[in-house]
Figure 1 (cartoon, rainbow, N blue to C red):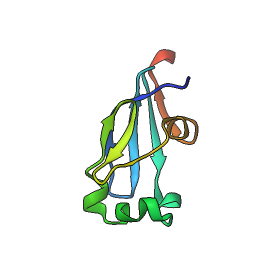
Figure 2 (tube, rainbow, N blue to C red):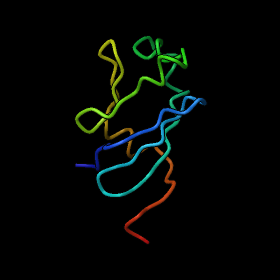
Figure 3 (cartoon, helix red, strand yellow):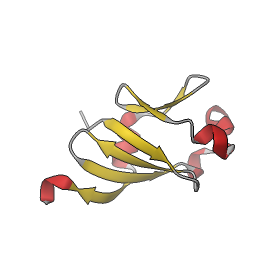
Figure 4 (cartoon, helix red, strand yellow):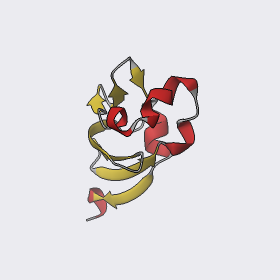
Length: 84
């Protein structure tokens, strides 16, 4: 099982800064997903910024959430605290 999200920041550029339970901080770009019907409400930046960490993943109102493995595997590393 891949690491899970413990805290996050929803950024104004439709990216998420994610902190995982293994100490890594990564950035995930949501823009490629905004064209999908399930994620269409996230095009509104105000709604997008309602993101919260929920059971190891990212969730929004209206029962919108994202696969936690995709969040980890497809995000860009910002820092890896284990290497420090």
